[in-house]
Image (cartoon, rainbow over the protein chains, first blue to last red):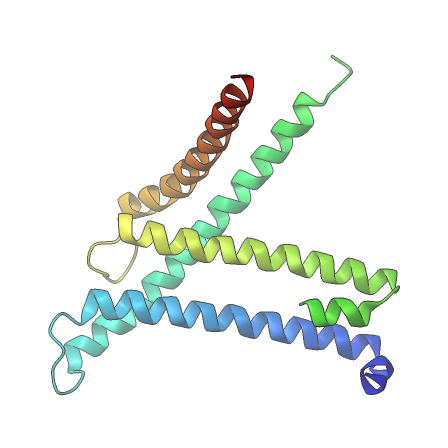
Length: 93
Length: 86
C-alpha cells in the first residue's frame, strides 16, 4: 500500500485509462467472436475455409459499423432526454 | 475500479476523474448491450456495408429499447403504488 500511495497521480490516471480501454476491447472482441461465429460458421468443418474467413472479416467490419451507429443513436437520445428534463424544470414560463 | 477509488483517498481531482471514467464505462457497457440485442434484430447476412434499411432498424432498435425500459419502469411503479394502497 505504501508503494501505491507513492504512485504519481498522473501514473494512476494513465493506468486507469489503460485498464478501461483494455476492458472495452476485450468486451468488443468477445461479443464479436460470438456473433460472427454464429453468423458465419453453420457446420463446423476441419478448418476455416476462404469463404468462412471472408464472412468473418466482413462480419467484424459490420459489427464495428453497427457499434458506431448504436453509439451515436444512444448519445443523441441521452442529449434529447437531458434537454427534455431541462425544459420541464424551466421556471420562467 | 474500487481499488482505484481507495487510492484516490481525499484527492478531489482524482475522485472526480474516477467518477467520470466510471460513467463513461457504464455508457460503453450499455452500448455493447444495445449492439448485441439490435444485431440480432437487424442484421441478416453480413455484407460489404450496412444498407440504409439496416441502419434505420439499428437506430430504431436503440430508441424503442429505451422507450420499453422507461415504460416498464413507469408501469411497475404504478403497480407497486396500487398494491401499497390496498
